[in-house]
Length: 196
Image 1 (tube, rainbow, N blue to C red):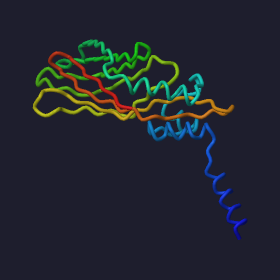
Image 2 (image 1 turned 90 degrees about the vertical axis):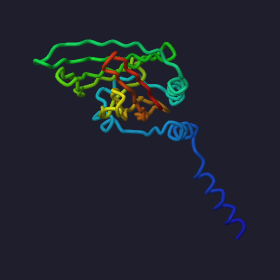
Image 3 (image 1 turned 180 degrees about the vertical axis):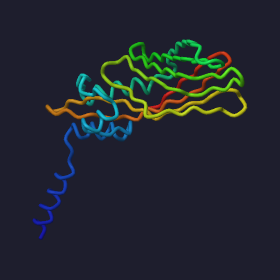
Image 4 (image 1 turned 120 degrees about the vertical axis):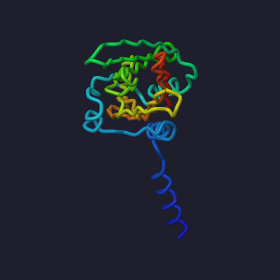
């Protein structure tokens, strides 16, 4: 009886042991809420994932840690105004967030401003990342007034995608990347924050 229990115990222990790659992957899942997506699923969300250069789990973790650790990214802004139909202006408000001098995330809001009442409506957005090691994909966008302050607040659940190469296999990693901020239509100041 003892020999059988010893064998069962040994078998159970070997079943729960993880490879080093599995341990690294679990760390990304627990630390960054990352999840694996297959190519078809990821490509529906963010086309051209196959164009990403493959990185290891450790390299992806290093990039994510750099993005998370940055407390005061440099932000530069630009506003372009284009006249639309009578009484209507199109505003393209861009904010470029430079993180650790190597990663640049650019958020561009395209808004419609109505001159008669000063109201502002969201038309479109663009989100790009300068790094070739990941793709940034925004999954919808919300713009609303922030009470009586005159500010507009925005938020989006977005994702960073990595192409992971470990032990000769390619997988795709999806990491939640929350974006939020405020836009002041009086001075065109855009505050842009992210969390990972």
